[in-house]
Image 1: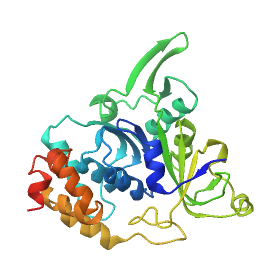
Image 2: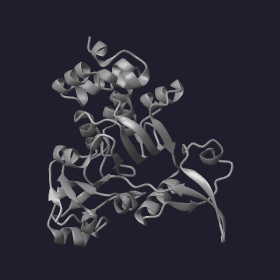
Image 3: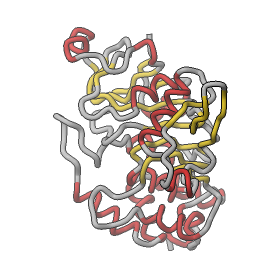
Image 4: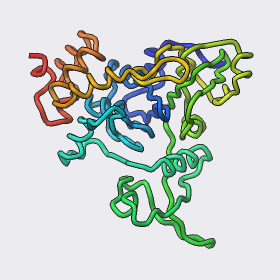
Amino acid sequence: MPEALDLAEAVRRHVQDGSRVYIGNFGAQLFCVGHELIRQGRSGLHAVIASGGLLLDQLLGAGVLSSATFGHCWSPVGPTPAYNFRRFAESGDTSVALHELSLGLFSAALMAGAYDLPFMPVSDLAGAGYIDEDWTGGRTSWVDCAFGGARVISAEVPDVAFVHVDIADADGNGVIRGPLGEVVLAAQAARSVVLVAEETVPGEEVRRAGVTIPGLLVDTVVELPGAVLPDGAIGRYDRDVAAYERYSAKARTPDGFTGWLRDEVLPVSAASERSASGLSTPASRTGSAALSEGNA
């Protein structure tokens, strides 16, 4: 039976510096997980986020990443860009490896991981930047065999997948309401799976609703209402558009993002510890002043 843990303990147990971390879901991002990774001072992480959005923007700005495999990184409330991502991409900085995949490529990579294969054949996508400009950052290749040649994508095997579900039971069976995207494949491919549930309920209720993620894949269940806020959860709460707008206004500058991170994510003690220890800060990723200067 999976363990029932709070989010902080689940992150402590399943994520180490340098871990490969899938953060779901498609269309409803687990901001709570990303923020907990930042609070715990994780570093050198390899983020795997198909629906990158502003969660990826925040992780990149906070300096916790070594690489990011993603489908997109934009603000769903516009017209404003994901400012940390934009600054990083335009700066020519290569300290974080970016691997941009289409959802098809992303799903195929996870399928290869789930099947314990080194790669998966995919459509060639000739004329697209994924191939012609190598947006994937080396994730695709060409393979010839007795049956012909094919474009392939390398397998994606996260160390841990954090998956958002609406309800879960004590056996780890979970129900997702809304678009699935690649999330089931991510749960199958990952070495461990943490369900983050809006609510834990008896098994009968989960079975009536229809199991999306079976408990045999799951290691840990976290009950956390509001897990994807400021995003929205179908049937639970709406997206907090005002919170997105506040974030975008702050993240327009490196110092503004530093202040937002301090006020909205980091406890005061954690912000002070990161500044004093010289750990990577949002400013170090964007070429601005150090966090301590942003506090002045």
